[in-house]
Length: 290
Image 1 (cartoon, rainbow, N blue to C red):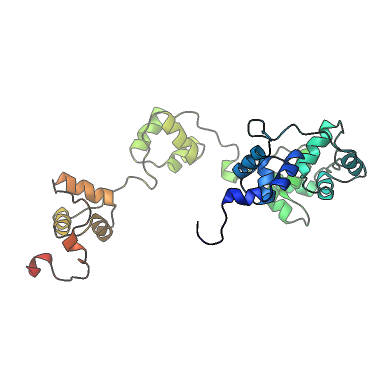
Image 2: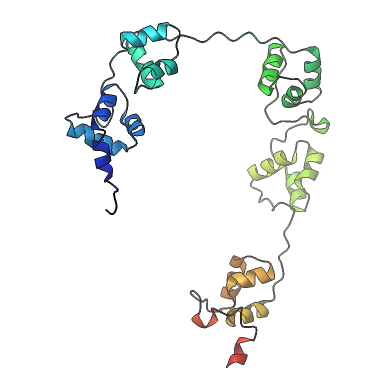
């Protein structure tokens, strides 16, 4: 190891007294490593070197809270404030040690009862306005508060993200695709057109068709294959062009270019050819250089 950098385990042994003290206070090896700026493995080695055998890699039994901790907690301090008063202590350790000492945790002040929603809020929500939109128009109000006030007033809350549309109120749900729907879909009708005919939404129509075993078309209808000039592609490939360059030139995928070459029994190159590395810089066809 070069320079003045010390081995990681040696850095841990410099703090062995502090590591042992923190570990005996109830901190986990991870917390000790974080406070000492080392690793959990280095803490483990330090504890073993000092005659301490951790229980299966975990911390030893945590002792109950000391009278000092109990007195600070009963003065009204929280777990975090008590931990700040005791060096090398975390709020979680304070909570666990107080619990072992039989100290009941304090409960926070009960939340004030939420008043019911006003008639204006109820009317706006029933007209289709979302809880978030209502909250945006009221200073200091959030969507959750609006929802709680509406529930307190007995208003049925809509699922989050569902927006009411006049054309979808009380729209019947499509349970399953009937033969007529399947026939019209295969004839070219879109899910949106079928939803207008049979009720529901385009999404429910697609779900019902899929449940009926119908193979759904890609979004946007039947895809028309892009015509390719096979002879031109084969010529470009044999002259040294890569499959990626040809795919970009013809606005298709590399997978389709490769499938075309395989279909025409064109030998596929493995890697780049050395003589074609500077092909793009050479503007002359490959045959004219000979």
